[in-house]
Length: 307
Length: 327
Image 1 (cartoon, rainbow over the protein chains, first blue to last red):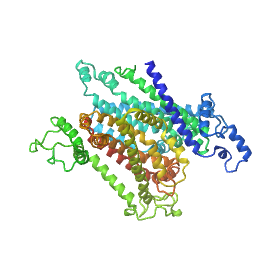
Image 2: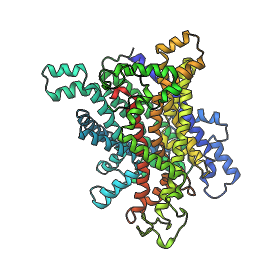
Image 3: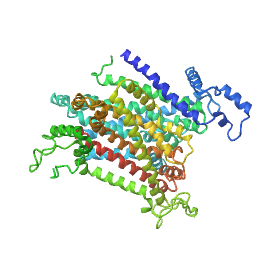
Image 4: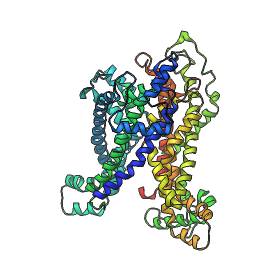
């Protein structure tokens, strides 16, 4: 187990370097960050040259990247567009987005798995078909459409929830945005669980468990569910990274000042430290979530052993 | 079981050759006693159906497939010739009628610029269908080729490709799109297509690699190799026809999601640019007026959702038909 973790961590290094370098390249192509600082006015050449020198921008790209990464690992993410350090921006943005993502994950797990089990056990009947068609419809409506619709219906018309979220993003106000963020994944979790349950429901061990006289709920929760959840866990694990990065649309609709919002600002203002810094953290989250998912396999399925 | 047991035409027979026949035979033999009893008047020693003709046989009877295929054909036709059902000009603006609701001759009302929403919804199909089909073709070709070769040859090329795919997986799609496309000033659909191909190929490459690795181990491939078939013949005649099904399924579903992705990028201001008529752009413009003129948002949003739904349902139906495990 320990050796497996170390091997996986080592494998993560080239992927991490590759992804961040790719983003670094793209941001580099965005344009001159020094010119962007001056807005519409042309900067004084001497001042611009000095800033460029201070920010290490007068070096070639292949030197800038290791320098930048070196700084990041010392905790120096640079200065954001509003003059505050990027780390300060991160601490507020990530705590908001993390809460939003958690709300979304909980919704997609609870509702998705429940719906999946419910329809998987009734495979081929009317209720199953209804759930399947509903999930397809949910998957087909893009988040920015469903977001505006739910915001309009629940937030404006019926006034059940706050249509926009306050700056400190209290948990209660994040329920509706969390639902919007979770919707598409929720449909995938439902379909995955349903397929998995329907396949395993005919397995020998389930028949044995029923023949032993175990109560139905115990057969479902202890035997069937535990074996059926493996693909679902994989999906949810890889989804954490996608949700945090994909919250950009949801955050824009509900005016939440999280990661997506700050990144969007960073891109608009061509502030490379903000963009590269945030994306670096997102890539890390994605890689670690994937590793945790693989380790979780062994817990869920004792047949899987990591040497 | 209807009479038409003999397949009208078999995709697999044409380009799949003996290999497709072989697997089709194996499968229909395997399934024959349980899932598909031969019709009493049918031919007991009849020609076995290939996987493809079997799938086509199922698909023609699947209402989901028929409905989604009809919707897609309709969308493609209006993408090619929008003037067939919309006679107006999508750019013609009459500010006096800004944000007005439906009226005679203008069933969907007007947008903020006073342009006819119906005409714009019809003309918007072109951008979405172009982006969806071109991006999917690019992704399937690039991903299928790279993944297939990696699966077939293995070795360092395989390792390199897998790690490269991991790198692209690590980049959040929307953020990558915002950064990548904010550099681009072109108003055409090509940068968006290029970006989707750039970030989309690893998904197909993984599927193709996995399915080639599985197909490679089959006995008939070993037999062909023992008979002296070269790599090119093995790949084209024996492996590709048997490994292509999962790629087609994933690509069909991906087509729908690419259309949604294009609209989302356009909504964020990074996708298509205004002279192009696009549902994403129109929805974005309408979103700030949802309280007083919801029709401006609902019609393009409905068209977009139906389009995505049609492609996803088509892919779903094709998968059910091609994957015997789910029967």
